[in-house]
Length: 491
RNA sequence: CGGGAUGUGGCCCAGUCCGGUCAAGGCGCCUGGUUUGGGACCAGGAGAUCGCAGGUUCGAAUCCUGCCAUCCCGACCA
Image 1: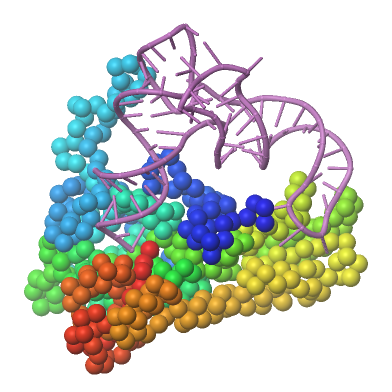
Image 2 (image 1 turned 30 degrees about the horizontal axis):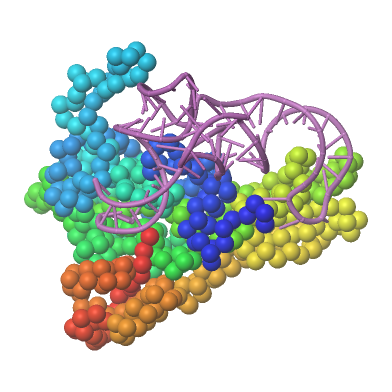
């Protein structure tokens, strides 16, 4: 592996950074904190996006688009919200440039100062609710179920490709409901959509739960989240869904007339996932040879590499390869036959491994004789001979098996790296030596949460749905606790 | 915004302390040929105002001043 990656065991962080660039997913731009998503990386995002979009529509949502720029005054209408985002907003102050005095440069024209500054959206609640005010008059207008695919900008101090960039792509759902119960149901339903997508398509198991009050979204009454465990034992928040109560309805004065003609504020939710999911996908499955992609999200399912001497042999192999290709395509499998004569097979093998292509087929002169092909699967790196006869259905089944295997592997990793602890020493020792998720009793106070964070850098990732109500003692304060919560160091 | 580091062809980087055939090497790229069952080899070729702006000097990638950008460690976050 002369041109390979740093090993995960030696430098996990360097491994991740180099993998992202070497697998041709993204690169740094000249703009601080902003990335360029390259075609191969965008193809994966596109696949995520299509599936999520399909599920949003299947659950009754419609797409719409709102402006990138938000008047500054809007942001301040919801107090908690502005507190949460103020420190990381980019601000547009002018609308014109002019030539500099040296004649070569351009400078901001001081005459062109905006009356009211515009904020580049860090999230769109405010500008969307300003519109919802006009869209909602009656209970007949509800529920209003809107989703937006957009870019947003948060001026982060430290960035990492996909995991945290200043500008990122995401979807944000914004819904309005007549009742509190209905809004809560919506927020919970969308979290289920996210969890299902993570498991079934990304092959990434997640823990569903509630955020603690301190970790809640700015302006939310309740934040639901999915938390995923990465290979290095750190947690990653993969998606959030918020019950916003009537906070935004009150801030933007969004009322509706109920069936009795009585004016009520509407109940709201918002929910989102971002290109951070790309980071989650990479950190969940990839290995020291490169990216590993679940078939359901891979831009290429099968790569065919010919091994040949001379044009004549290549022509013979191409005939077999193209036949296999069309048989696979007939089953909906995306195939690339790589007959590039400039690259040697070894180079191609390494390349498709780096890019995470789930299945690779090699066809050489020996295979022509025997009527076979060599099939290599990316997830286990196993190679096996297959008969050319009836290959397509077997590979279709293999792709399904790979998808399943990746999920199972990730599930066992999660299980092995989720530890229940009973006391503070154990907590610290597990965190330091093993990492991963830690289930422990917590007294429910923000003070304890903060102290644990300061002493160990571990935060409460969520209060999982599936921990039981039980009598217990807080792992830190020894005060009374009613259930275990999920701790981890997080991205 | 504090602490540390870096900036040299598309990429990785040597050279900076001690100014003077010094703009080196590797990868990649282009051309031709030989190759092809795990990242091929040979030959030739193109490509750099040494981050930017001043200054010192006969002479600056190298010394001085200012600026800019990026990366790492903190506080902030999906």
